[in-house]
Image (cartoon, rainbow, N blue to C red; front, side, top):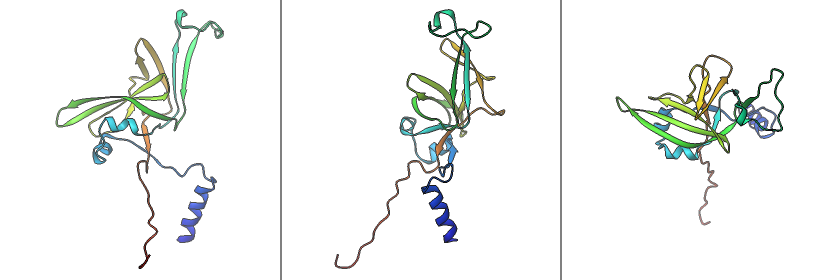
Amino acid sequence: MQRHLLTALLLCAGGLTASCTRYVPITIEMMEKSNLTANDLKYVQFYVSRDVAFERKLKPSERDVGHEAGPLGLYVERILVDEKTPGVAEDIVETPLPNDKRRVLLWISFEAGSRFPFVAEGSGGFNLASTDRRLVLGDRTYDVSFEGPDRPLLLVEEDQGVELRKLKGRKVGR
């Protein structure tokens, strides 16, 4: 048993495994159990659960002069967010729901100047707030692409926020 644990620790420490960090979906229930307020979420490191692509056709006034049109004369903006890309909460909007439940909308920024909405209701997890694989951000409408039927989730590291101290012990007279 000890040999297996030591081997696992050495593999993680030596970088021989892809990652020893475990990611879990963050939920409103998790927030409540940890006594996190909405404002506390600004200090939490978030990650997106899967690759996501946002795409929209550009209006003529939005086009960069240096970029050429595609083969059909189209100009497209494509934003890619890879799985496990880290992000931070910039804005949080809480709305009370019936039966002491709440809806929480987190605006997550994966890069300065861009942010995307993730929403959770009741005690559930935070999903990308897109409808029918479309996302409206101000006057821009994006087509959203991702694998599988379920919308991307917000994740946190399983042990995030854990402060570990190992005591050395004391001896009599010292």
